[in-house]
Length: 242
Image 1 (cartoon, rainbow, N blue to C red):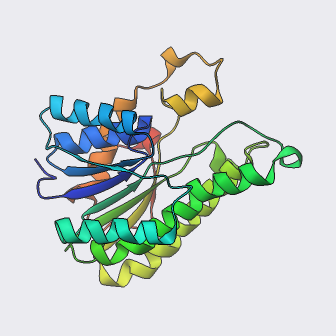
Image 2: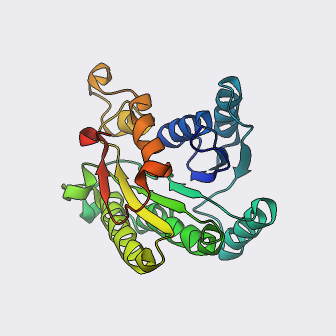
C-alpha cells in the first residue's frame, strides 16, 4: 500500500479518466476525495472503490464552471479542517462539446470551456497550495491531450485551454522547485477507450484503443514515491515505462 496515509483530491472523478485514477489510487491505500458535478457518477465510482476493498472515499459534488471563488475557498477550508494536509491533486475534469471552427465558436461556449479546462484548475490549485504545503511531499498533476497540444484545426477553446494548462504546470513547477516539496507534472493519457474519446471520434473502432485501466501504473507512479524529485515534466502514457 504505497499510498497509505495519502489524501488525494480528484476533479472530474465521475468521468472516465478521473474514475479510473480514483479506483487505481484507492486500491493502493489512498483516501480519495471525489469531486464532480454529477452525483450519480460520483456514487458509481464510490461503489467501485468500496467493492474493490479501497478506503471509503469522500464525495464532494461541485460544479467547476458555476462555482465562485468563495466556493473554492470553502472547499479548501473543509479539506484543511478534516485532513490537515493534502498529498495529491489530480485535475481530470474536462469540458469538450465538439470540434468547432474558430469562426463559429460562440462566446458562451468559449467562456464555459475555458472556465472548466483552465480557470478552474488555476483557482483550485491556488486555494489548495497552502494545504498541500503542509505535507512533506505532495503532487499536483494536470491532464493534457495528445491531439490538442499539437494545435490541430477546430480544437478551439479546448485545444487552447490544454496548451495553456501545460504552460501553467511548467510555470508552477518552476515557482515551487526551490522548496523541493510539491512536484508538478502534466499527464498526456493518449487515446484510450474513454467517454470523451467516444464523443470526439464517434466513428472510431474503440476495440483498438487501450482500456482506461492501462493508465493505472502511470497514476500510481505520479502520486507514489517513485516520482519524488521529478517536477516540471510532461509524461506521455503511450511511452511511459517504469
